[in-house]
Length: 393
Ligand SMILES: *[C@@H]1O[C@H](CO)[C@@H](O)[C@H](O)[C@H]1NC(C)=O
Ligand SMILES: *[C@@H]1O[C@H](CO)[C@@H](O)[C@H](O)[C@H]1NC(C)=O
Image 1 (cartoon, protein in one colour):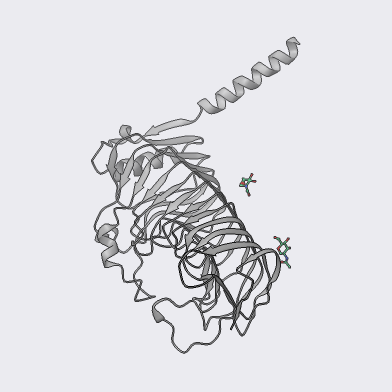
Image 2 (cartoon, rainbow, N blue to C red):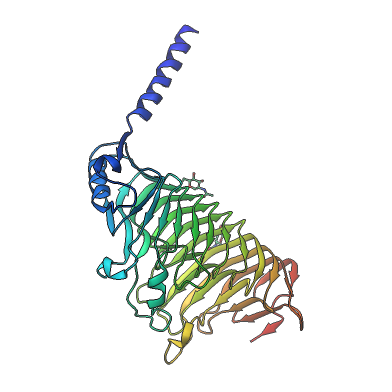
């Protein structure tokens, strides 16, 4: 008994000791003041925190102006970025000198981003100058939060607001979790994708609430083992794999699971999109399950002729091969008749596509919901409303 107790006491002390050793680096100690620019203060606090093992950078409540910062590792040990206040980006894109990010976390293992605070991208001016709708080689605008080469990390309880371009971008990340992340921007803000993932693996997103002007979550090439659980989207363009096939040497997309999502008033639901005239590529093992659609245009869509604003010249079919894709328990309402549209490539038809328990009602007048299929023969089971492949093209 006595021995057990002492072991318990010792372990408790060890736990306390280890939590106590998290050293605090409050940006105020580095000269930060509310409503002032804290770029230098944050840079200095980060450098100091990164140099010790088990540290926490704190930005307490209040609004602060912040220019472009790169919060660079590797750090001595685990590091937390605790944002309780609101960071405000410069209004003018010129302040970024052509750089494509605002707050950039780079090469960190064991990062925690937390605190309930807001990254306010102040995008209103930049949206008016965005040319990416007309020109696919447009200059990229700053992304609110970039995660480059981040491993074994967690991002929780933060908000990204009114980004000038994508809100959150992952590049070369592994084992990164997002929990309770909120993203907001107006429905008409261009290219304000919520979370974009590429060249990353073992990423999971749970309980995110994303309302924005472009894709809610978009998954680019070179991604594996991505799970999105209980994500709420709307407004925006829905959850999207792709677009794929725009560039040479794209890596496969493998192992994507979207479960328990709710999409409201978005102009797509769950989608896989690839460009025509593409190099070859692979998208496989992609599963959408238990998704509620509220007044969504195109709730289920595979589009291998994706070419917004007719940017494509002499079109040949996409060579991105899509296989092992399932849509299960997808239900609710479609705002267009095209509830299901599976337009696969003539050169590499889709394989192993499953439609199971689809129940999508068209709420407008003038007819019923349709299901269109091209170059695909889905395996169907359970409820099929609309009946699978009512239109074959
Ligand atoms: C999310 O990631 C954590 C840590 O990597 C893991 O324990 C958990 O099982 C993952 N959840 C899902 C749904 O994949
Ligand atoms: C298809 O997806 C299922 C479910 O993720 C997976 O278990 C299976 O290995 C995949 N099959 C192929 C041929 O990739």
